[in-house]
Image (cartoon, rainbow, N blue to C red; front, side, top):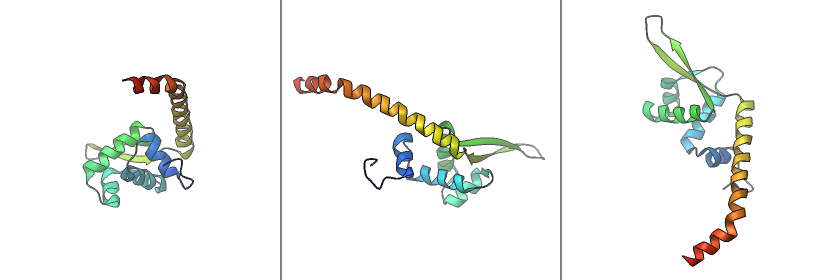
Amino acid sequence: MLTNKSASCRDLFSCIYDLSTSEVALLTLLLKEKDSVSLDELAKSMHKDRATVFRSLQKLVSLGLCTKATMNILEGGYYHVYSAASIDLIEKNTELRVREIQKSLNLLMKKFKSDIKQMALT
């Protein structure tokens, strides 16, 4: 996928962060929003149920691609709002992740010849 000349940023997100098409669409929506958005608003915009969008948001937050903030309700209680991380931060995290993958691939290639010979023997 990434070796294709027409590969895009979406393909990179899918590959290095293991994001589904729906999760990439959610990140895209968050990047377009000027303000933080609630789970209900996101679910409605994406035409998906709350649980599905919530799981995707949890993944994006854990990867540092979006942030979650708690908002208090005057009558009591709270809710969460989400926004995309800054493009600069996403770029920095993505560059770090690509470097980690490159490092891992280099280590694998160093062991490749002995590993493939071992595979042929078993």
